Amino acid sequence: MIFRAKHYQTEQMVDVCCDDGKIVSVEKAGNFVPDHQAAYIAPAFFDLQINGAMGVAFSDINLDESGIRKVLSVCKLHGIEAICPTIITNAHAVLIHGFNTLRKACESDPVIARAMPCFHLEGPYISNEDGPRGAHQKQHVRNPIYDEFKEYQGASGNRIKLLTLAPELPGAIDFIRKMTSEGVVVAIGHTAASPMIIREAIAAGARLSTHLGNGSHAMWPRHENYFWEQLGCDSLSASIITDGHHLPEALVKTIVRVKPLEKQIITCDASGLAGLPPGKYSMWDQEIEILSNGKVVVPGTPFLAGSGSFTDDCVAHLISLGVVSRSQAIEMATNAPRRLLQLPEIKIEAGSMANLILFDSNKDLSFRINRVIIEGVTLNQS
Image (tube, rainbow, N blue to C red; front, side, top):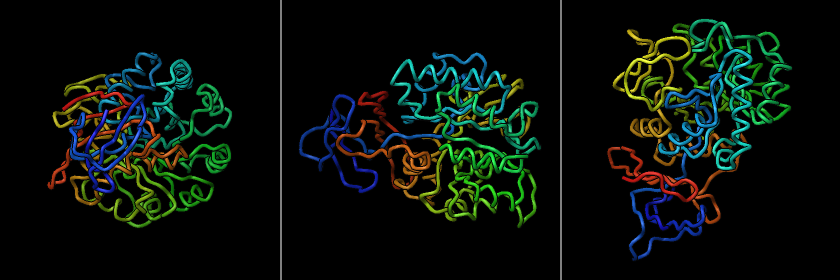
């Protein structure tokens, strides 16, 4: 199978030949007719924060392998070749069940294992304050306990490689040191910490700000606060939800212009409602509404209640703002999160897995995927 398009980085028209699930060759475009052609070709996405989709939540006591497959299938249709399945604040038994189920799915099918190379635990070690806590259930928020985390890690088969916590909690700084020494990337998120504690967390090994700008108070001190402290730290990577709902345009532009480019990561933070049509749903023991524009809210209010977007939506929105190039936005959704988690980078070169997206992009900075190739198999057509 030969795909012809401009390379997303070099702008050179290339023929990418794929066979048996891998890229066989990448050459300058020839004079023959290829199997498929588009404006651009790029690696498929990797998202480090996917909570579920299509009515399936990884943080659900009823999670099973069929639900996992359902989430992975819809993610792939949106150009996402791999994810960190994310389990959030919940009862101990729910977390154990979730990680056990994810582990067993990986052990039973190498395709699933490749699509979920590591797991993300967001909470339960977060702030219990309104605002920073976000949509996490207050009754399940708790302080970090090393032995409890080891139970989760054991259930996962040592696949938890990313942990989001609030560093102001009792024992959190020492906990960060332990996690870092064990190869777990610690992220700061859902926090009400002082700037001093943010600095202590970074010194202890924290390397990421989880969805920077979200999961915070509605009002804070204008100069001395946890947002500016994280934004101003060049060594701290930042994931941002660029779906057009979670952050205003001016704030997205500011974060992208301030943070070193290699430290910026796009996440869609898809909830279990992502991919469902507009309407009212029950999730997390409360009623939630998906509006016609895709925004997920508490009914009758402007308050966010999760994300209904996928990574391609977030890449498209960021490109439309004109603050980064197409290739930069794609790097933020492919290799930037992989580097953070010390996973192999994905490149369009011979020998690489054929996980690709073909997309159209005009002078008006639009972005639209028209074909997804996962392990050499075309999943959708324009």
